[in-house]
Each structure stands twice: as structure tokens, then as C-alpha cells.
Length: 199
Ligand SMILES: [Zn+2]
Image (tube, rainbow, N blue to C red; front, side, top):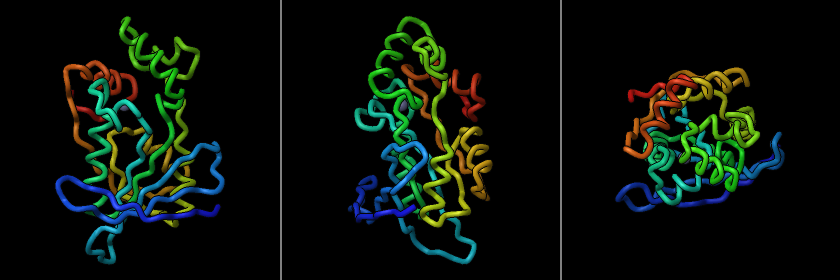
């Protein structure tokens, strides 16, 4: 599985840009254009292990900073932490938990009528969560990353990465970004999918 990398300096906080490498992948099992962003980080002793974040694409949160979800905040936090420590952000093209952008907008409209984030996807005929994280393990393998510190509050991501052969030496929790527009969304992630969120 060949990878191609290109230099993409990334602005982190108020600092000048930090060098990063953006990877594309030749063949992944679901044929989507997933990418990885790798930061070298600073000092590396023998015990150094890359910090890895598996982030699902969210146009509304990542680009427009929508407060309906916490994705934009989590991505910003990931870039800050991974660029400091060194490691990889896997940016998975799993818009709307894998259902795509237009269906996500349909799901948002259903949520406005009272369905929660999972029920709305099911109402539209999709799985409540259609993402496969096996592809994340494939990407790490292609980059020769076998052992990681995982930045997540989602136990399902941890389990699926382990099941696909990734050695996780530490779970690093992400922040919890409560806003009046997303509090029900966060509570649903906690109650239905056991996310470790103090809400
Ligand atoms: Zn989002």
C-alpha cells in the first residue's frame, strides 16, 4: 500500500506555521480519500510513542465552527497536542458518521424535530453509526506506526483499533466542549455509545 506525502505547514494557535506532512494512500479498503497529517514533534527519547487522533470529517464543525457538535474544537485540540508531542491525525472522510454531507443535513433537520443524532440516521435508513475504523488501522500500518498513544473519549475507537492490530499504550482524553447547542448531542454520545464525557 504505497503512500505519497507532501509538506503542508500548519498554523497552530498564535505561533508561526509548524511543518507537517500530508499523506495520501494508494489502496484503502473503503476507497474513500482519507488523509493523514503527521507532525514530527520535539524531543524523542527511546520511550517516545506517537500521539494519534482518529478524526471523522465534519464540514459544519471543522470548517464553519458550528456549535451543534464538538468536532471543530476537538480537531483544533488535536492539532495543538499532536503538533507539540509528535504524531499523526488521521482525517477520515466519514462525514455525518459515514452517511455523507447532504444526508447529514437531512439528519440535522430531523434532529430539529426531536430525534437524537443516532435515531435521525436510522430514520433516514442508515446505520446509527456507519463508520468503520478498520481503515484507520490500515493507514497507520502503511505509515509504519504500530504503537500509539490514542487521543479520544470514544471507547469504540479504542476497541476497533486494538481489534485491527494497533497497540495502544495510553489513552489521552480530549477536552469536553459543552455549549447550549450541543449539550443534548454530548449527553446522547455518553448514554448511547459510552463516550467518556462529563456532561
Ligand atoms: Zn461535528
